[in-house]
Image (cartoon, rainbow, N blue to C red; front, side):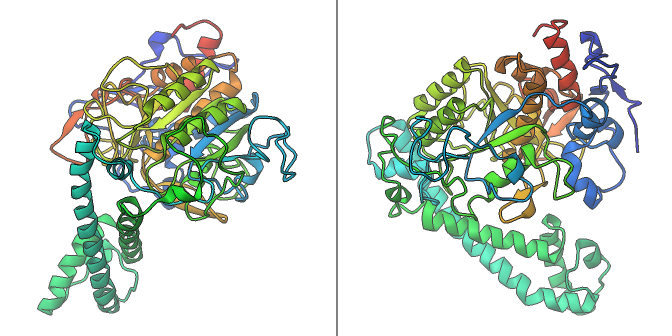
Length: 542
């Protein structure tokens, strides 16, 4: 493995050579590159490396992880800190999962299942959090809800109407295309597998296959293209089935103007004062809890128990706030969910969701400002459409149209790929010099899913909780640091690389890594602890 011979420290100038009561050497942060001359590893990641790549160290592993393993090995081994509550505002969390059950927050002031609001916080039997969706799981996109309310002459209505027609057509065509591809794979994969002698063949297996018949040559060519985006045939089928489910859900729920997912909740989603709704079932529908459970595991899956994974943070409790359906979330649920987490002790809140219309965005901004007033940090996913957020608003956010931020406790995270080099930005990740703050691992992340399962998922939804875990560690070790200080510590202590990277998955769209986020850096736990220690000791001012 190539070590750090081409790396130059950017924190030496800040004096970050010592920290945490012992002498630690800060990671050298700036790979010296010219254009695309990155120092890259020569081999593919092993299965074990892939499962832990987000915790790897760029210097020793040439993988753009967050140096989590190094931080635990060299700094955190004998340090515990204070307990920190992390609110996970998401689709639901399987609080009974084998790797999460020991890190779930319990409201000690609430008597379980007695039908009373024992702590007088407005929520009955909220032992592990609150479910703002009740029995609802599926929902329209916000643009559909806007259309259903009728033409009010607004720009939002005009834009939503035009976008709806395009999205509906795309969903119909996408469903048909994925169904046809899956039919082709099911029809012809067995014949290729029989010829190769391996039912679940890979791209490499296919490359070594030399059919004589013209028909099989054509089929090989088709499969070669399909397997460019899959590990093997079974993975290809799973991806195609996922596409069918995605487009099917869009047509049945997200884009269906005759569907109303809110009717079972029983509140008025346009009235922020109508708060008497929801229940204490923070898991909700188990399948829909997959996303939130995965997020929770990234942050705090029990460390050292020899199960599926180690979360980023130790000494953390996960507070489950169910507010994100299969479709677009309601602004009201998000605003109240943030306030619930704040009022019940969360010091970090993870928000791995987003949408491009927000009729009541001021409610969410007020909640963000409320969190700031209570010294709570919000870590937010940038979004997965490969968009420049300096030109497009995505919600929730802390500023609209590049205006001044409403608060200084909101950290927006883009996603990294595990290949260090020009392709290190996940092709799906949104980016922006003004509106994305940092980047963190988000491609093919291994974590918890419901009913004691584990899966790879990807998205900025996975990058944000990695950073929430970093924030939780800092808040645990240095509880006197403010949410704003923790935000800026994470931003300033990251690794910055010189060189152009591909954005939006488009090889022709290459931009300097330093220009696609406001910090120009990728998050690094090891360096964040060192800087936090310096700030806490007043040796460095932010």
